[in-house]
Image (cartoon, rainbow, N blue to C red):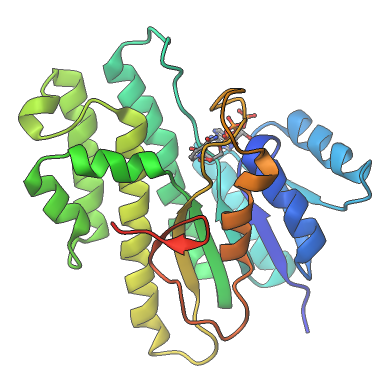
Amino acid sequence: MSTKVAIVTGSNKGIGLAIVRALCKEFQGDVYLTARDVGRGQEAVKSLASDGLKAMFQQLDINDINSITAAAAYFKEKYGGVDVLVNNAGIAFKEADTTPFAVQAEVTLKTNFFATRDMLTHFMPLIKAGGRVVNVSSFVGSRTLNKCSAALQQRFRSEDITEEELVGLMQQFVDAAKKGELQKGGWPETAYGTSKTGLTTLSMILARRSSERETERTGDAILLNACCPGWVRTDMAGPKAPKSPEEGAITPVYLALLPPGATDPHGKFVSDKEVQPW
Ligand code: NDP
C-alpha cells in the first residue's frame, strides 16, 4: 500500500504548527508542514525534530496560484493524491490597525476566502477515497452570519447556494466595503468575520458536492468539515486567549483523523468536537 500523506497549510507557527505536531504523533504516514516562507518553514521543521518528531516540508503560499499548483503536482506525483488536508492558513488585522477598512476587506477576503478556495479547487480532485478535509474557520464566522441581513443569512444557510453564488457574495462584500455601502448591502463591518462566514459556507457546499460524487464511486467517503479551534494564544489572537495552540489543535486533528468508515460529521461546522448550529 502506498504511503499516506497529510498536509497542513500555514503551519510554521501557531495552531497550524500544533496540528502538525499532533499529526506527527498520531497519523500513520508522512506529515507535511507547509509555509509560504521557506526559512520560517524549515526552522519549524527543525524545532519539531529537536522534539524527536519528523515532519516533511513543502513551500506553499496559498495567495500564489503557482505555489498551489506546484504543490498539488508534487503530491500527485509523489503520493498519487492526498489523504488529509488541513486548510489552516489565515490572517487577521489587529483591532488597532489603521489600514483603511476597504483595504482590510480586500486583503482579508483574499487569503481567508479566495485563496483557501483556490487550495480546495486544486486539491479536492486529489483527495483520496476515505480522505479528510478540514477548513479552519472560526466562531466569529457564525457570529457574523447572525449579524448579516435576513436575506444574506437565508442564502448562507440555504442548501442550494452554489459555489459561484457564494463567490459573488464575497466579492459583493469587498465591493461594498470599497464604496462604503456595507450597511446598504446588509453586511456587518467585519472583514475577518465575513471571510470565515464565507469559508464555513464554502465547506458546506463542497461537502454536498463531494457526497454527490461519492454515490458514483466506490470506496470510503471523503469527510469535509469546517471548524473553530477556540480562542487560542497565537500571534493572531494574542497572549490573553485561554487555549494553548495544542488545545486549539484538538478539534482540527479530531476531524483530520476521523476513523475509516466514519460517515459523520460531514459538511458541518464543528467546535470542541461538537457539531454547532449554523
Ligand atoms: P497565526 O497568525 O499564529 O498563524 C497563521 C499562519 O498562517 C502562519 O503560519 C502564517 O504564515 C500562515 N499564513 C498566512 N498567510 C498565508 C499564506 N498566504 N500562505 C500560507 N500561509 C499563510 O494564527 P493562528 O495560528 O491563530 O491561526 C490559524 C488559523 O486559525 C487561522 O485560519 C485563524 O483564522 C484560525 N483561528 C484562530 C483563532 C485564534 O484564537 N487564534 C480563533 C479562530 C480561528 P507566516 O508566518 O508566513 O505569516
